[in-house]
Amino acid sequence: DAGVIQSPRHEVTEMGQEVTLRCKPISGHNSLFWYRQTMMRGLELLIYFNNNVPIDDSGMPEDRFSAKMPNASFSTLKIQPSEPRDSAVYFCASSLSHRVGLFFGEGSRLTVL
Amino acid sequence: DQQVKQNSPSLSVQEGRISILNCDYTNSMFDYFLWYKKYPAEGPTFLISISSIKDKNEDGRFTVFLNKSAKHLSLHIVPSQPGDSAVYFCAASSNTGNQFYFGTGTSLTVIP
Image 1 (cartoon, rainbow over the protein chains, first blue to last red):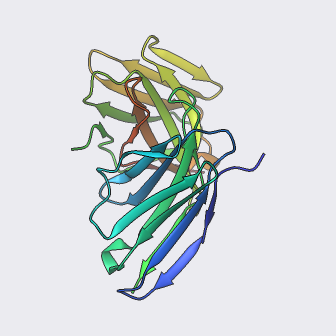
Image 2 (cartoon, each protein chain N blue to C red):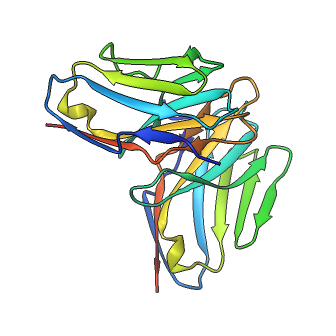
């Protein structure tokens, strides 16, 4: 079975540009999560969806960040405009229930120059 | 505010010895705890979990202990192997929601 698939794996862009990260969750999983890994906060939850509906976006740092899940098999995280402090590894994860745990993608490493 | 805390950013252990990684949490509603292992350039992968109705769960070389009164859990790896060198994240969740709260991670180095 395919795991969580993220793209791109690496993205280098210039400040002010729009960045779109993509995620395909594991088929059948009903929850999808976007995390950002930083040294200070570890794995920081940005937003999560349950049955394609955003449940909690309180972790989204500011209005420059937005996320969508148009269907059960696809989600995007968009940063517009991007800033150097957005440079991090962004992980997508999916889950069937909280007792099953999370399955992570390999991450998208974003560098904003 | 960080609901799950890992206060040791790094740990070095000799091969064959025991590695003990610690984790503290603040929310008494958490009822399920997980440990994830992360290698560089890869996503975190599930390692072991424990329900709040237990105080110990063992899987091969890995054992997780839960002390609910202290709101503390620990991961024991024995014997430690060089391949165990990775970042370990502690996570917690509750049945009142489907969120998973992660600590900041502990980087384990097992010295051959």
